[in-house]
Length: 478
Image (cartoon, rainbow, N blue to C red):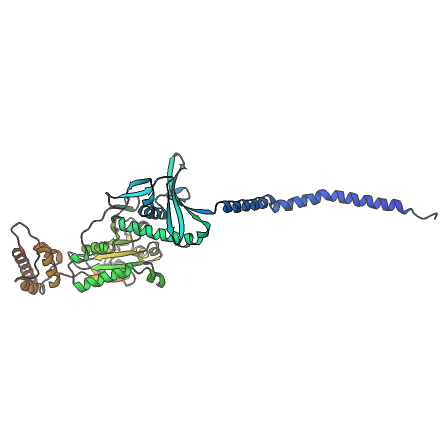
C-alpha cells in the first residue's frame, strides 16, 4: 500500500547493528578472558599436571625412594659441622653394615681413645641392611660446596635407598632405630672429657681427657649413705620417662657440703664415673656476665655433670639479699663498716644470684637434658636459701669428718689390714676429735720403704692424740 514503510531496510539495519556490536565486544571479551586465564596461571596448572604424570611414570619404572643425611646442617650463611644425626648414622654403619663393604675409610676417633680407628665407607660404596622384613641400602657420597671468598668445603653425606612399599617401616621405625643404636655406640666407645670454662674474649670451654680413678667402691664413706647416693643416681639416669611425665627438665641438683678435705671432689669424680658422664667445671668468678653464663650452660651437652665448686666463695651468691639489705641499712644509718662496705661491693659482681637461678631451674634449664648439677661448699649456712632449696638442689649430701667405719675402709685400702690392736684406740679418738678423711689418708700413707701397717697406724694415733690435746687447750683458754 501507498504510504506504508518498507520493512526490509529496517531489518537489514538492525542486523548490521548487531554484527557491529558483537564485533566490537570480541576484543574486550578476549582481554577479559586472557586476564582470567593469567590469574589462573594456566601454564603452571598444565606444568603441575605434567609433572605429576612424570613422577607417576618414574615411580612406576623405579619404585625406590631415598633419604639424604648431610654431614653439615645449613643455618643461613653458617654451616654447623658434625650434625648429630650424621654422626649417629656414621657410627651405626661403621659398627655394623660397613663390615660387608669392600672399600673402607679408616679415621682417628674424635671422642674415643686415640689408638682406636673408626671405619666408614668411601665415596660410592654401598651396603645393604635388613630391618623388620625390609631390605635397605646405604651409600656414601661427597660434594664440594662453594664458600664466599674461600676454597670449597667438602661435604659428606649418606643416602638411604628403600622400596616404596617399606616407606612406613623405614620412616616410622628404622630411622629411629639407627639413631638410637648409633648414639649408644658413640656413648660406649667415646672417651669422656673434662671441660673447664674460659672467658678470655668470649665465654667458652676448653677440654682434656677425663681419667679420674675414683669410684664409689674406693670412696671412704658410710656404706648405707654410699648406696643411697648410687641408687639415687641410677634412678635419675633411667628416669627419662618420669621427667617427661611430670613435666620437668631431665636434670637433678646435688649440694655437697662439709669441711675442706672431706672428699667433695672425690665424690664428684665417683659420680661422673658411675654415670659415665662428661664433667663441666664452671669458675663463676671468671665468668664476665649473666649472659656469658647462659651461653656456657647452653653449650653443655647431655650426659654431663656440671660442677660449681666452693660456691660460698663466689661473689654476690652467699646470702646476697640479706647482705645487701644490711649494707643498705648501715649506709642509711651512717654506720657502714669496712665489712659492710665489702659486702655492698658484691652488688656489682659479674654474675648475680638471679642470673644463676635462671640457668639452674628457669626456662634456660630446659636447653639440655640428662644433666647433673653439683654445688660444693664448705659453709652451707652462708648460702642464700633460694639457691639451695629443694627443687634446685634436690639432694643435700653432708660430707662428714672421718668416722670409724670410714677409717676401717681406708685402713683396708691403704694398708691392707682389716683389724689391728690399735683400732680400738683409733675408734676412741675419732669419737672425741674431728679429722678429715684426707688427713687420715695422709697419716696412713707409707712415707718410706720401712713403713708398714704398725708404723702408719701408730702415726695416726699420734696425730689424733695431738689433735685431742690442741682441742683441750683451746677449750681451757676459752
